Image 1 (spheres, rainbow, N blue to C red):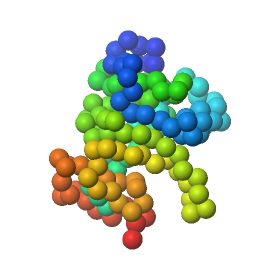
Image 2 (image 1 turned 180 degrees about the vertical axis):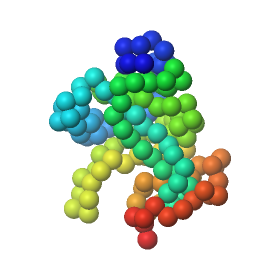
Image 3 (image 1 turned 90 degrees about the vertical axis):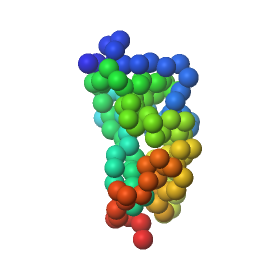
Length: 136
C-alpha cells in the first residue's frame, strides 16, 4: 500500500507533534536520501533499560491499521499498537556538544532511562526491561 492509498487512517488533529527544529531535520533527511514521498514511521518496541524503546524509519508503504498524520509538511505514520504508548508525544531534535539526535517527549511515560531512548508507561510494567547499552 502506498502513501496515496485511502486505507491508512488519516487524522487532522496531530496525535504526535513535531517541533519546527525536528521538522527541518526530517525534511533535510528526506531531501538528502532523495525520498520526498516517504513518511516517518514512529514506533515503540519492547526492550531498552526502561522496558520499551522508540524507533523511527522512513517508509512509503503502510498497513490499513496505521494512523497517518501530517505535521508542518512532514508525514508521520504510527501503527495501532505504538499509538497506545505514544499518543500526544512531541518529537524534537536536540543538537548539543554531548551529542544530538531526536528526542521524544512522551506524556504517557512514567519513567525514562538516562539516555532518553527507552521508557515505561503505567500499563507497560518493567518486566521486559534490559540494558540499552548507552545508559550507565
